[in-house]
Structure formats: C-alpha cells, structure tokens
Image (cartoon, rainbow, N blue to C red):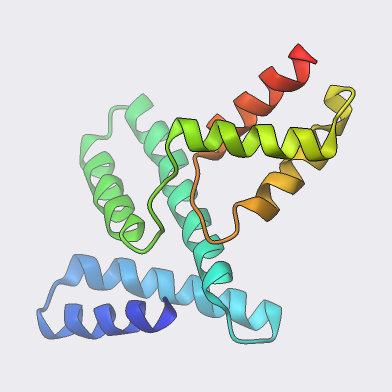
Length: 148
C-alpha cells in the first residue's frame, strides 16, 4: 500500500495535480512520522491505521467547518477525504459490522458496560485489514451490551 501511495505521488507530480500532490505529501509525512515512532517499516495494516486516522481528522474538521458555514473549506476537506479513502479497503456494510460485533460479544461475553473496552479491543483484532465505521461499531456494541 505504501508503494502505491508513492507511485501515485509521482503520477500527481508528473500530471501537475497540485491538490492531490499536497494531500499525498501530507499522508506520506504522517506515514513517515508513524514509521519513525514505531522504529520499523510499516506493514499494510499499520498504513491502513494511519489512513483511517487521517480520514477521521478530516471528518471531524469537516463537521466543525460545516457548523460555521465555511463552504470552501468543506469542499476541500471532502476532496481530501475522497483521495485518502481511495487507499482504504472498502468499508463493511451494516450487516457485516453487526455480525462482527456479535462475534466479539460472544467471545468476550461482557456482563456490564465496564467491559465495553474489551469488546472494542476484540473487534479491532477482528477488523485487521478491514474498514468499518467505528461510530456504528461503538453504537452497536453499546446496544448489544445493554440488551444482555
């Protein structure tokens, strides 16, 4: 995945696509910072984690900009999210997420909301190499634990 990002960076340079180039440079910088902190080459799962963080940062900013009516910044962030999302695996649908949550809850068997962290940890293990809307995951986990 890291190689694909570098390839696309070169293509953006050749095509003089300054916007995509700047987004990919920011991503590459974030990846290099993570690589320095981990002190080893990043595998695809670690690259995916950094990508998810970058998308989340932009989505959070997007909500703030929309709240204050900054439409030019909103459009830019949406475009950045679109570029970054191209490198993420396809997001799981609601049914798949629910099945994953059920599997994690059956394995952990939580007795109270205090054990939600254990369930989320198990879900993160099951999500390696996959992409899911974590706000949906969290919501489903809360609902299912409350039902028990």
